[in-house]
Length: 331
Ligand code: TYM
Image 1 (tube, rainbow, N blue to C red):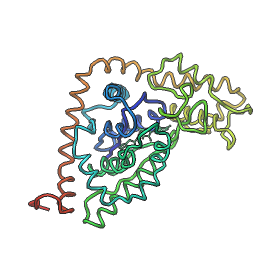
Image 2 (cartoon, rainbow, N blue to C red):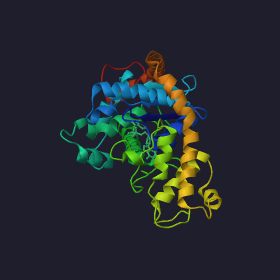
Image 3 (cartoon, protein in one colour):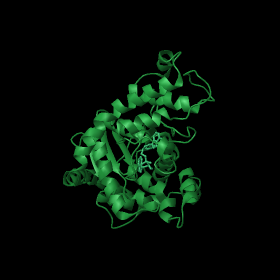
């Protein structure tokens, strides 16, 4: 079984990225042949500063290793080190409909928020994402809930290519966590926690100090009720229950029983403390790993060499089936 996922090296990574994606990457290492890619090319589709992009890449590589990615048990690499991603993107554009890309909600949100130029790369972002996944004959893609539409598009692209040019790609399946697929902002719990557009007080970063984490949870927005129970009018409490369930690896119902009669204040503090304990080892290991950029570069380069070897037969097959380049011997 082949598992693939990608993550952008932009901004500081938060509890949503950690619970929705990174901890599941770590688990994937025991379930199959896993590839994890830092997608630096995707990060060039919105306004950015080149030095910040590179620094963000090292931050994220160190964070993922600190969280438990083991380069001996997975292929961990940087997207731009494997040029086959960009080539396959171009090939897949011929089976992607313009109208499909226009319907992507992430494109509409980001294009709407752009200060000046809306880059063509932003429009074609989902095709590069499909290329990332399809290049490795991926079976499963662990992602958070906000990537559903992109995963569906990747499936459609694979099916359309296979129908038009002959069986070439495995049609991948997105996998989503049972709890924590959409961690919400602590200050505005009807909005997802995010690096762009969230509130700093409502976003818990993986490398936040324990004091900062406790402060953010203590000031989390709840509602005027008093019972720690899930409910349709209680987005703040629902979110905190989900976070605690994900961190402890238990069911929300167990928590509702445990906190029966406790006030919101006591509950919020308990969630904050649990998150501090949960993130502490990652933060501590991160400091050490981040200091060694040479090691990070070496790790990513070794991963890229393995990824390129796996990508080669797929890109050759796609080229051959599309009639691009010279006749391949075994096409
Ligand atoms: P990115 O970098 O925005 O986010 C990385 C992962 O974190 C998940 N996530 C969340 N999960 C739960 N709650 C949240 N509030 C939350 N916010 C983010 C995302 O769903 C994602 O799994 N387009 C992708 C990167 C990408 C990719 C790929 C993913 C490029 N190529 C191929 C999978 C396969 C993105 O922007 O993720």
